[in-house]
Length: 490
Image 1 (cartoon, rainbow, N blue to C red):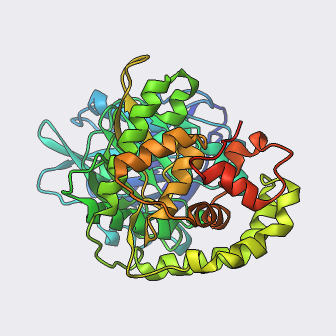
Image 2: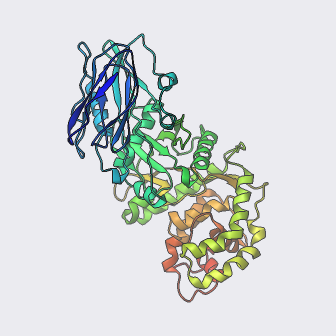
Image 3: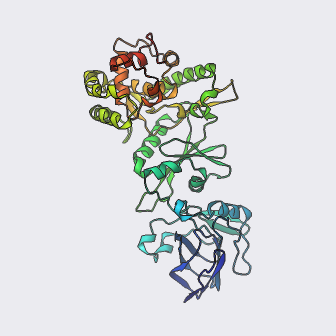
């Protein structure tokens, strides 16, 4: 039998009286978004909404009561107490973890609601198993937490720090969240916990980006992949790329672990990668603070690094293969004119010319399996890192391989030229020289302009405002952008 007293104020305590040996699933009201509970018996408390908690579990110690501390909205948890004599208080580190992930928020913000449960078990006890949750209603089994043992004194504390899955009204809401480190910090820390790494240190998110990239402390980067933005493909592609590149000595992060925040769910499991953090800041972050000499060193570095990347032996995988690249290019050739109309970066006068230009260059674009390399796929300014102080920044590495392909090496040059170095031909020449590219050929401008138009991303936007009005044809634009000995964009 179980009795409850409902919450009657914003800050209050709910007393749940239990009779052994078991507690069936129970719902009780709460006026707060989040709850932190310390239990002296095996019971889980899960927040399933701004007004509802679910309590379930067993009572092997025949403890008389459970105390649930409900903080006021906007306050961190300040009360976590044992409810039976002889039970030690949680160590301070656990209380700090609880405060980090149990900060009350307005439900309208759709920030995570979590109910971390902390309880002591004798060393002879085992980790909670799926059977523990057999009585839980089906609709709540999807997001069962994972548990981490933490020794404390003569007991082992099992702790779950995984918040409930994030929910977004639409893609715009997700994109806005990417710059919110406070929002993603609980999830990044949960990934590190799951992988067995420490989670201490400030959490910083990189933005703009496609998938969540959170640096935790000084040493770890957590990449979380969002389902609606090709999350599974990007996760598997990046995973395969790092496996191919492991041990090659390239200046890239080291893949340390992989996993999922919700591995047993029927919904999106939120797969993640844990990597070493790259030292320094990206060219995009440093922006106009970089001197010409620093940019030239960066261009030289990109050239030598790209050559080493393209020389990597390729093991055909499920996601990185020539077939994937060939399908990409043929699809882009067929629909790039429509995408440029939607993107709106290319001036209107060029739009009617796109289909004819790409069709004429089809032999230059057609993938050739005899000449392929491992491609980065999107080596823009946000993926090239430098470290140091003003005037003395030195390149440290490149990141982000979720767009990797096996394909034409020319493809990588488009993002480097357009989005890493601002369509600066002198810097492009340095990239090519450091790479050891060799003879460009007479059709170089046409090939590169066609790849620019057919690229998977908008490769015109960074310099669109600099295109002179007197440039009327794509042939003229190709010369302005890609012919190294011709005049450049103003």
